Length: 104
Image (cartoon, rainbow, N blue to C red):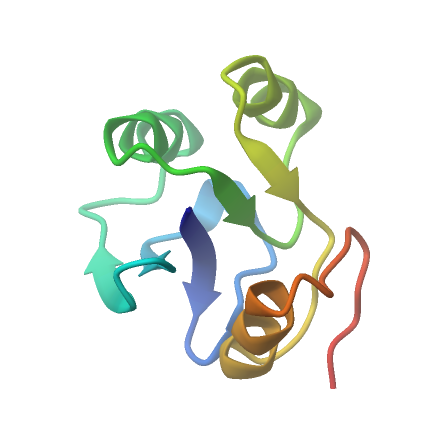
């Protein structure tokens, strides 16, 4: 399973379309890497997600167009998440994260 988390500093990025930093977690291989994108663009981020074969996207706010597109491409989207990246990552790895979660 490959997870992408949108990041702004140490928190979940509040807007998908303005994201420039993402954390990619490969659960089975126990790999974590940070990627800085050249610019913030929802279209380019969607292309990046598809190119990386991401299974799950965790983000703050995402426009319905991109949400529906990712679902159509069989990518699970957990949106409206607020909180520090480390704690959110722990919750998703334990299969406890759901849409709209405020993680403290």
